[in-house]
Length: 360
Image (cartoon, rainbow, N blue to C red; front, side, top):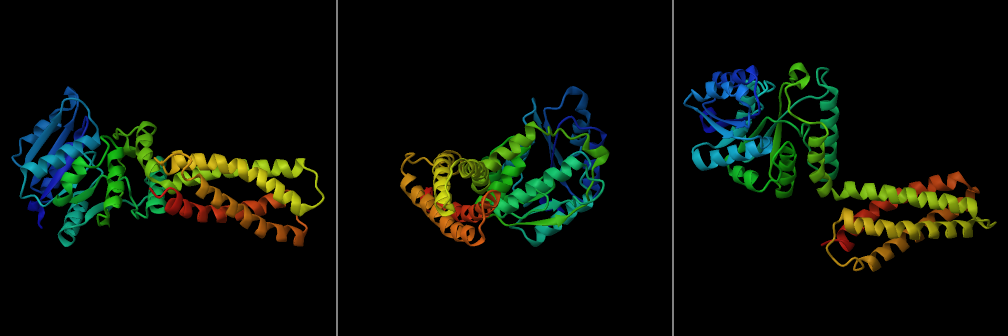
């Protein structure tokens, strides 16, 4: 695969003078196919597209209104697949000057070596020139993908991506989203379909602290994380489990202080039972509705969950009571030990519920 076999895709909304430099820079680097998407730019920002369209190797797709970066990429993918049969891969590039031509060529080289892999151009977010919001946002998202999907990519928000032709149609038709969330949804789809991928280190450029970006920190962050949270059952399990654990600990502590019993063993059993029964009911309903999104009747998994809850209580008693009696522990230390034990049991409970209770 050489540069003539690769199409450069650049979506843009209201581009400035940097856009023309991006296109000319890619041409100077040896790329010969370009699909530019005018995503509803106003009349004052049409000139960069008109200048680019004068070149015979450039095709400009125009949205009359702004449809979002995701839709712009989808339309470009469909255009390449349907109209450029000799193109073997595409490289997507942002039009704000933050991707160097030499980095695009590095992706092209990797595509030649690995024609079945999606290639990501990944930046180094430990460099000093990276704006704080970009650094935190990307590191958090990368951590979430690594922990909950085992998808290891150091730059989940990169716009520099090399995509073999074989994936274009699926990425255009099967990946949800029309705006900035589309690029994260692409990763989720790749993870589900086990699509191979690799990353190439690229320059980390933030021109004027990325002021030209149309990314809305609130709206677009919600769009990005909504499908991630929807798919990440482990993440949702931690949230609901954490809330129910706080309820459990609060009830346990209140009972320990409110109920008068000289026998610490009986007191611990009683307080544990009261707290666990209430928190278990709340936790089951949360897991049924929010975590595993079960479509079975609400009470179908209740007997199995009851067995797990009873088992957790039994294990908790067996572990805690001898320790309390042997060390004469009372009060707040009881709560601390209970918390440690419950965290360990929570990990076990998650996998049991996922594989047994809510497996559908």
